Length: 82
Image (cartoon, rainbow, N blue to C red; front, side):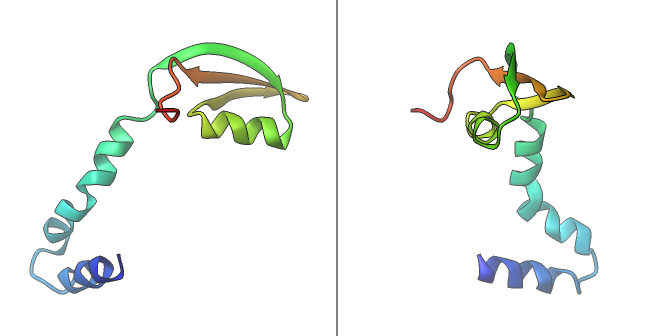
C-alpha cells in the first residue's frame, strides 16, 4: 500500500494529475456507487453502543433518532456471514 501511495504522489507532478489518479480511485468510486445496499426490513432498537456496532457490522444503518430509540434499516441478507 505504501508503494501505491508513493506512485500516486508521483503522478501529481505530471501534466494531467487528476487523470493519472483516476485508475487508482476507480475501486472507491464503484464501492460508493453500490452504497447503500438495497433496503431490507425497517426496525427500532435501543441506542446502546454494542447494538449500534452490531448493526453497522451487519451492513445496517441508522435512519433517525428519537430520544433513546433509533430507527434502522438492515440489508435483506447478511452478506458478511458467507
